[in-house]
Image (cartoon, rainbow, N blue to C red; front, side, top):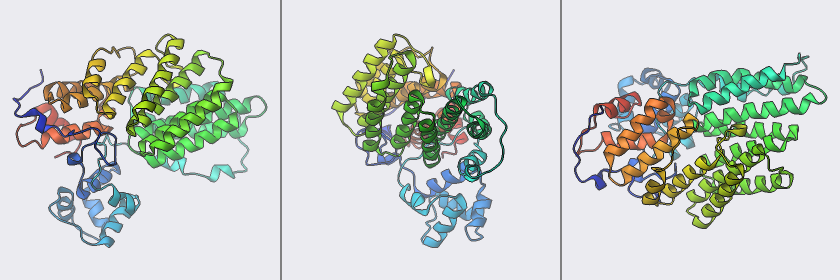
Length: 430
C-alpha cells in the first residue's frame, strides 16, 4: 500500500501552472520547475557517470565540496573560464550548458547508461573508406539481432538496447558493404532500421544530438535501399528528433514531405498504413506543441482514418500503430494544448494493456501530469509509481517524472510519501 499524505491548497502546489505558457525547453513545462545552472551541471555529470570528485578535479583542480555547493546553488560560478573547463569535462558545448540553465532536463535513468560505445560507433567514419574485404553476413540472422534492439526499446529496457546497438550497427554496416545483387537493398534497409533503433532510444534518454546523427545516417541508408516503407520509417525518426529539439515547423514540414513522397506508392497494406499513420501522429504532436489546433486536428483526423482502415492495433514496422495509439495521441495533444479535462476524460477510458510497455508507460505519465495540474496529487503519484514498476528506466529518463517529483519533494506544504522520496533519491532530486 502506498502511503498518502494530506493535501493543502492543491492547485497551488502543482509545478504545471499552465501547460501552454512555456517559452522553450521541453513541451508543457512551467518555469517554476526549471533547473538552475548547478542542477544542469549535476544532470550532465550524472549522465556521464562522473563523481563530484572527478569533475571538480577537471574543473581546475577544485574540490568535491566546492562542486557540491555549485550544484546545490549555494555557490555561484562567476568566471567563464571555469564554465568552459566544466563543459569540456562533460563533453558538451559551453553554449548548451549556459542555454539550458533555466530549462528543464529529463531525470536520469534508473541505471546509469553507458552510451560511450554507441557514441563511438555512430561517430566512426573510418568504415566508409575501409578497403577491407568483408565476408557476407546472414541477413536473416542480422534482422533478428536488429529486432532484438527494437524489442528492448519497446520494452523500455534502454540499457539493454544501448549495449546491443553498437554490434548490431557494426554488423549491419558490414552487411551493406559485403552484400551484392538483390541482397544489397535489403542489407541497406536493415542498416537503416539499426540506425533508427539507435535514434529512438537516444531520443528517449535525452541524447538529442546523437539521436539526430543516427536518424540522419539511417535516412541515407533508407534512400540507398530504395525502400519506401523503410524511408517512411526513417522520416518518422527524423521528425521525432526535430520535435525533441523543439523545431516544430521543421518537424511538420518533414512529415508533410514524407507523406507526399510515400502516398503515390502506397499499396494500403498493413505496413503502409502503419507507417502513414505513425507519421500523422508525429505531425499532430508537433502541431500541438506549436499551439496550432487546426493542424493538430487535421493530423489526428488523418491518423484516425488510417487506423480505421487498418482495423486493429498492431506493431508493423515497430510503429505500435492502431486505433488505441491514435486515441492516446488525442490525450497527449490535448495536454499540449492545455485541454486538461479533455485529456482526462478521454485518457481514463483507454485500455492500453495490449500495447508495448513504452506506450503504456507514456500514457500513464500523461495522465499523471494531467491529474497533477488539476491538483489531484494522490492520483498522479499512483500513476507515476505504477509506471515506475513497469519501466523504471523510461520513467527515470522522462522529463515529466523530473518535474513531478521535483515539485512534490520541494513542496513546503506537504511531505512526500516514502515511495516518491525514494524515487527522488534514486534520480538525484533533492
